[in-house]
Amino acid sequence: MPRKLKKEEIEKKIEEATRILKEISTNRQIPRNIRRAAEEAINVLHDESLTPAARAANSISIMENMAYDPNMPIFARMWVWRAVSILEPIRD
Image (cartoon, rainbow, N blue to C red):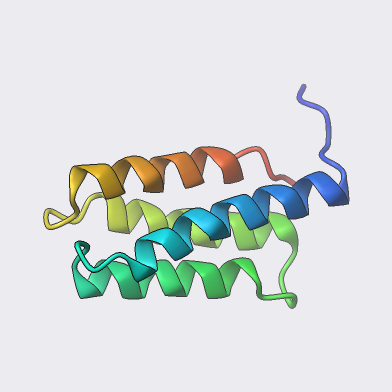
């Protein structure tokens, strides 16, 4: 069974995923609807009313929808999957 992450490790992972999502949300080569979804995922990640695992899971759900959008550029899709892989280990 994987070890439980410490609060500092969780926050570091959330900030790293946020950095990637901000890169997506500010890149003008990416369609507007995908940039908006990236902003929504950032907001979910920083919603303190939810547990870290719930924030990560909700954000991953949004990012999966983004990744399957046919208008998503390949380079941005790679960024999305990188952010997803960063957030996946976060559990309660």
